[in-house]
Length: 81
View 1: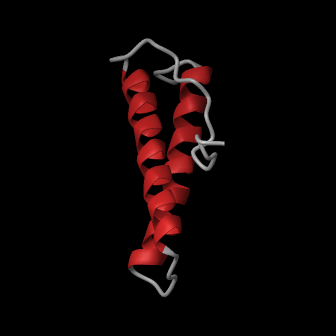
View 2 (view 1 turned 90 degrees about the vertical axis):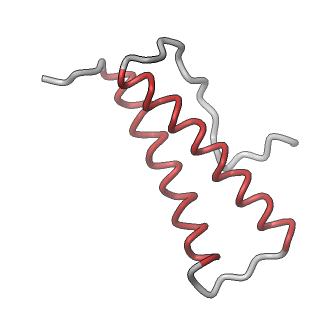
């Protein structure tokens, strides 16, 4: 029996997967051979930070500490466009 309703669990899964993708990319840059331009690096760090915020909010909701639904936002989306 699941401890959370399906929509909360789905939001958590999506947030976790999005953050994981951003972490993988960060690891390719900092631990691998990928060398982005400075503006691309800044964008990468910003996307990872937004994905982490979304994950943290989804985690709190999953644990029952936050009842506000997290707005659906793609962490890869440029917020300035």
